[in-house]
Length: 88
Image (cartoon, rainbow, N blue to C red; front, side, top):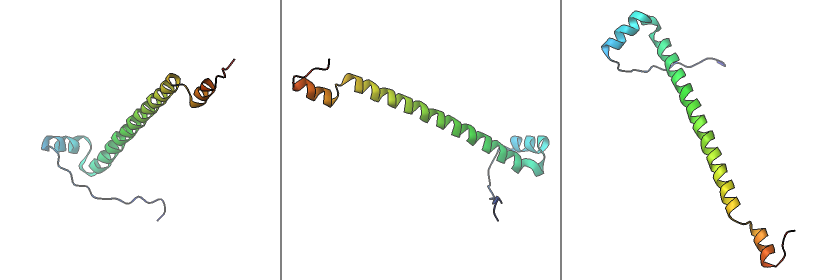
């Protein structure tokens, strides 16, 4: 059973005009395949968009951390400063 895809029945409701158009343009026996491909394409685009948004968020987060790090003196630098030893 390796490599086999398990099929599941999905019942959906669509406008009768849309169903008639599907039957005419796709053929009644090919509607399931068409819908499956359309959903897979849409989900692929959704995954791509989500991944892009996550990467953008990551970049903004890193930039924010770097900005904060540049604003605040690092603890070690502060300890040397309090000890009266300067970096030359």
